[in-house]
Length: 281
Image (cartoon, rainbow, N blue to C red; front, side):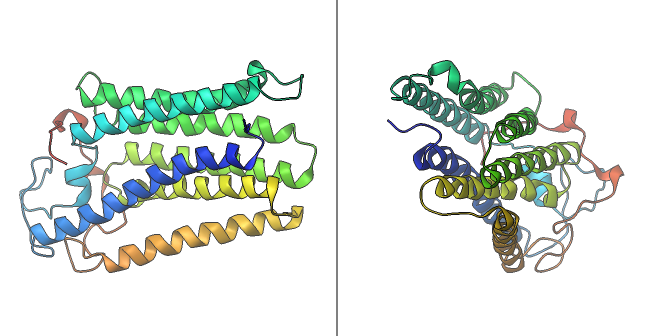
């Protein structure tokens, strides 16, 4: 059975991050298009959470924090299942490793990576039942990515090969950016830019994890090209997001008008006590 130090050991968690990141980016795109249709491409209307009586209905007004208890519940359950299976995979890979110096506890850092997102799944499930405050799942995501930064940073520092060390240290920094993006989005739920950035960096994290896996088995990534590889992958993700934003009509003024991908004034921030969860996606 392959361990985490193989291509499959990197590809499996990468597919997890890629799947969730792409799903929420596509869902955001679909919701923005649906919102543009429902508001007639930017007509002014009233929202229950706005202090203004004349206010353009924006994506963040309707979907941040997440209102759909069904979506939260399904995501939470899926996270619990996927991370449990990933943890078992890591443990079994260590148990059956032919190297006698490697055991289950040797893989503790990799097990902790899965436990971070098991925690996110549990929080999402509790949030879907209304047992904890709205947006707790994204707070948990920010915490999880912050812990991932610590784990990847420590993992990178113990590497002796320069290229391998750079790959893992940059992986840690990508996770730190994700933690900051999700954290800021929770702090300022009116910023569509921050909301999209969190999921986009999750996709980048997946691509870079795949790169780490390829460097183990197939690609000789030289130390001086590691940063360039990350830069190219970042530009790829950014380009896809920008093209999608340009193609998506947004309420408040055509393509990208109104709120667009920017935050609004602080006095327009939504208070959490006014937010209620519903069963509508």
